Image (cartoon, rainbow, N blue to C red; front, side, top):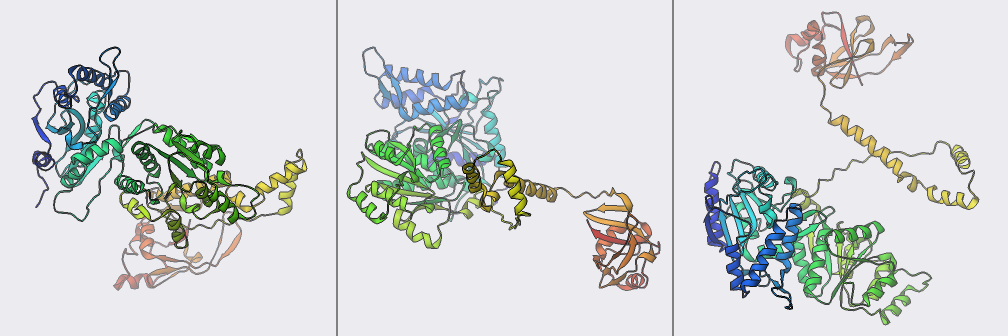
Length: 631
């Protein structure tokens, strides 16, 4: 069926029917002319809370606190949205009378998703922005009367980007930022491009595409992915387990992160380890944060330890979890880690694998047996995330760590394809792959850029060893012998010299200049240079060389230069022995500067009488010839 040109109204009617008939949402109707449209429909929410068994006093107090957090004028949209999400996620603390126990009023039933009231309204007219402007989202999804999703649809000839930008402008204070304080999902779609999704504050370039059941082409991708994402159980699951507030940026998972975490949850429930291979740059840190949060919330006795092999990674992990609102304890040593695990808290820790090392061990196998015989006591279920596991899975430090925590479940994370000789070892240590997201998939999804490799061998030599020694002695005159030896040890290898920051900056600058030059548009205009030299399209042209200084001939459609004598700018005579072939096609472009010469050379292969005319004479009728050299 040809959908090009289908009106937006037809698409909207079809999507509305999909939510009503296939997903089971209750249709609220067209709210174009309805007054008082809000992101918190108090009538709907009150009815659901009353049905859930809450008293009128509790409902009234919960509504007041929810409105207060959603409409706080002294905070940004991000902060209001974060505050509202906390109330949705954990409930509203309500105390109706002094002396009574504070109770949590649950605004959404997370344990029984189908027990919630799912509804959809179309053409929801919004007023009340700072600029007094009126906007009307195509579709709004309500859960228990709380707006959690906005859908902007376009006809098949209009880009999804228009819908995304419309959603973004709606979130500005001049329009209807207030309405988005409760919204968790922002959708834009059409029949030709499908569906893209984001959340509050997501820039246009970071809107995501869902991918699932790609072999099924029985219906529009817009419809297929709305059915996948907005199914009642999945919508509730996405809100509960996959929303992340990360240092001022609200995030939703990419599709590979969602399915990777779902697969890992199954392994955790069965207390099985494994490997999550998600390519570099695809968001492994977010997977770690969301999986750790799920483990700690769903397994009351669980402890999560994140192990890295570099200090900067350890600091990065600590920063990621802290920004996401998950307090994490960074241990100072292996003894400190085991001491912390011997207590009930903290539940989330990170450490370097090198902290498990021990000096003075002659018989490593005997040392491991001794540790295994007397493992350190740990409190609770221990789950260990090993970052960059391909670098440490077979080392002694890893064996020490496993001996110290024999009952722990180990999950390896890597962004690097495991080499054939390492793959078997990795699986013996961690188990099979839990989930994979390879580089080619990430490039196809535009998660990462394609890797273009250009081998450039930059030769490095020492010009004079003696001069370097003299320079070193002069610069270190004030140092003692030990200090000089320390400097020699630090800079005495080519590896350290080649990896120095100053050299890397020079190499990067050289590449930047080269790429900038290659990317610059070619200038058709000529630039005048001394000695009658012109630069034309990146080729240097010497004009009007007299016949007696150059004798050339045409062979196979190319001008072949013989040896020539001449004077350079300094007057010195020198022999030019180079022979250079120049395409007559390019020669014609150069000849455009001389009308008579241009008439002698055609922008095509030489054939017929013109070929004879050129071959029969060493120069055109203007009495000059053209000599080309490279710049």
